[in-house]
View 1 (cartoon, rainbow, N blue to C red):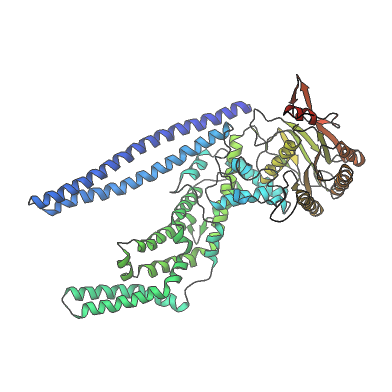
View 2: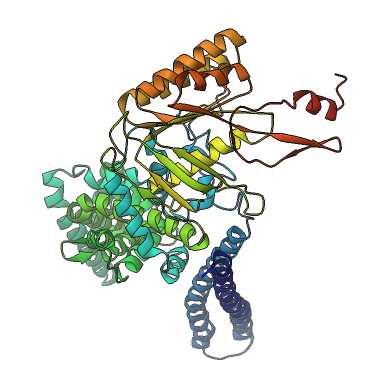
Length: 615
């Protein structure tokens, strides 16, 4: 099947499912309107019966008819609203999918600007986070844990060199999930909220924390939670029977209960913890976990992740659902109509104690549950990207140096028809790259706007995708695991008093340190342009030599043709390539194709004249 027909099938799949969900949503919105009108009618009927009851002599029991009807309508209406909200999420899910298939996705996903780090060796340079970023394109996770897992797969290559076997195993998991459209739909729809924003560390730390109740409190509190409400009930009964002791005894019990509440107020709040503060999000977690537990996986890692969702013989979804119910009951004490009764019934201590017992039983497993769900969400994000880009390919991960050959590091990066994954297919120009011994670096010369920096980002973005376990925008790709360092978007810092040149030097030192520790891909864009040509040439040649001696591979762009001599000095380890432009009918034209050798012309003066400068 050709890539074009495969993409057409994806579009047809999404459009068909979108049409079904739009029809479902329209029906649910009609039912929502009908239930709203019926509830108003019940209220009006109640008011009419109250007024008529004062003027006509009939049984006040008739008021129960609209009240009961209203309650029934309220319960059923809530279910309709939940289904309507789920349908809205499904419609949004497929509309966003069609936007991605038609390259209209920028800014409509999870931009994750809070993951951006100006000091990271490549995330800002390669547009990993923010509007129109790689994360914006990829992330379909609904939990904060899923977002964090995907972000770590994209950014890990600054801190460590991921083993090729790990990446290949992740590729297998992604492949196994590509065609599971129903699973991804359910993960996007299930639950009662759009996203789960509670940070995993909050739940994990709460689950692992030592008990907030002393041993004595754990023994006494359950007894008081039963005995004091029973005593209060007995006092009310005595009062109702006419005993003078009843009200005074009730007052004494209430004083004791109030004292317990006051003494344990902070402890109860901490015991309920995130279960109390994030109740609705727990519902989403339970729904997502239940859906994953029901999926018949066969791929080993997916089976392992699903198996991690069992604790003490109970599925994680059931345990989280139990916690959500306990949190809901605990929260009921804040209802103004129920608050007074909650004190009498020792409601807070009883349900805080129940939550604490849940935590003692399941708390240590929370980390494993969240990690399993996070990894599955991240894998589903990559699988969704693979499904929507059937012409992209999974790269071949090689074990360096055994599969590459001995030599300086044994690193390699070979790609055919590499394209930038963030550019639309209509404008994306493909180029080949071969960094394999003896050639391990290209010095890229070229005129302004000819595509040098974009090519560096093309290579870097595809390597990030490859090392994350995702398919890449290429016809084929082979590479070894490596760390990444780039200098495409180095910025000065007024707050830290650092000039751009100093910030660039600091980043280059980081890249050099990466290369000294592990196999590294370097992407250096117009380095040392804050100094004179003589110093720039000497510095660039020395840096390139040092990186190659440390076994790194990579690309370095330049406007200064003097730097192209560095490749000649370091040949055959480094070679010259270039991008060029053509002046046709007084206008500059770029084909964005990489060619061998050094560029032979410049377009700077032509560009100056094109904007009206008198040069």
